[in-house]
Image (cartoon, rainbow, N blue to C red; front, side, top):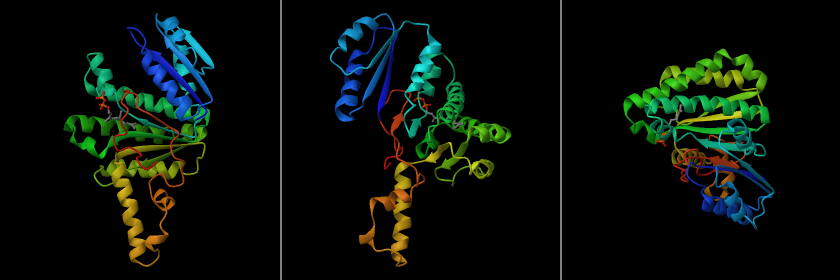
Length: 274
Ligand code: FPP
């Protein structure tokens, strides 16, 4: 990552410690060359002063209500990365804050997913991976699970209908995850969409549904073990690359950036090898 953009906004004061910690990591650990910071709120000038001494190349201070510019600025973050991965969480909290049922949060999440796909294609980001449903998510209440599956279905149908448009944008859709457990009609739609978009190369969108990182690694190991058992490989010859080559993301670069909108910092079994 060459450039990082940080947006800080909160109703009551800025989380300046967060900014300081984040900048430290960018500069010292990742040697990021450019950092731009966007502050929204009344404490912006105070916060800006506290950042003195950091290698901040661009400091934008906006006051509340400048939503459009805020959105554009947030998106700068994705501009220089080859592979951006997103854990689609925070939906429940988003809905709760507004007194809405959780399902409304997921609906909103699915809308944002579509916007990000388009944005990624516009900007030429080569890979975007969305963690939409983990193997653990089956434990959620049945009505929530079926609501999420319906949103996925709805998207797949819509994507079929808008095939031309997606093709023009160069969007290639790929499913990553364990097929077993998914409804037949969803698998059929996924297969059609994957086939129909296979030759599009601008942006590959990986949708992780019924996905678990440990399962993914285990399957790769099993495949390699079978090759050894058949005498095609020897255990000594196995390399890290062999594992990478047997993951769902084979042939794709590892993510440069993983975004978790809720603000959590756990990976939750997502792309743990990558
Ligand atoms: C986690 O947020 C989110 C999910 C388990 C589901 C995300 C999936 C979708 C929005 C639909 C998928 C559709 C497409 C088109 C890919 P959470 O409910 O845990 O929220 P919280 O972290 O605030 O509790």
